[in-house]
Length: 178
Ligand SMILES: O=C(O)CCC(=O)C(=O)O
Image (cartoon, rainbow, N blue to C red; front, top):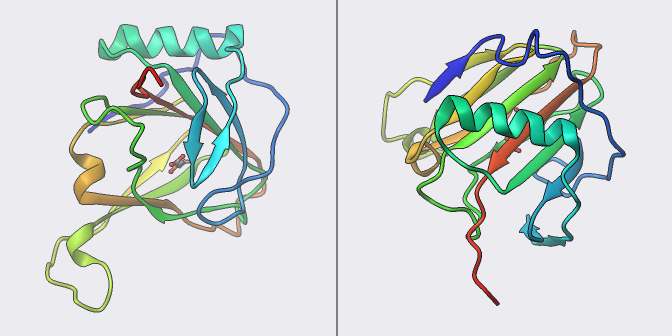
């Protein structure tokens, strides 16, 4: 895992766009898809949207930092601390398992919790503690494989947070040629 504070700060660009309703784990966060090609996410097929110059700019900056290329970005908007994301792994079959997931945060700082898969449910077989990170404005979190195999992640409710947050997760989708 790699965490870079202030990755975006000073780059002088901001994100904007229209927002679609969420389909995802909590149905709480609004989200936007920017991707090529189309993608099935939580069982819902999303059509491709063209990349905006701002998203391309951020994608290139991440590629320069990480050496990885990305052909998909998921955009989640949280209007305040009541919007949240339930515990899950990014394990969609279209994702390239060798590519990290690069997560950029803009706006309100939010807690992000990792929980090891062996500590979930009643059959807790491990004493591995959850890991909490504060995802501050402008930060970049890189989840390298096999993080998503062993660790679940979530963005819990934080009632004191009143400002919005946008999260961009850049991913690499396998092109099947179908
Ligand atoms: O908003 C975040 O930081 C988390 C987003 C997330 O977990 C996801 O898109 O799978």
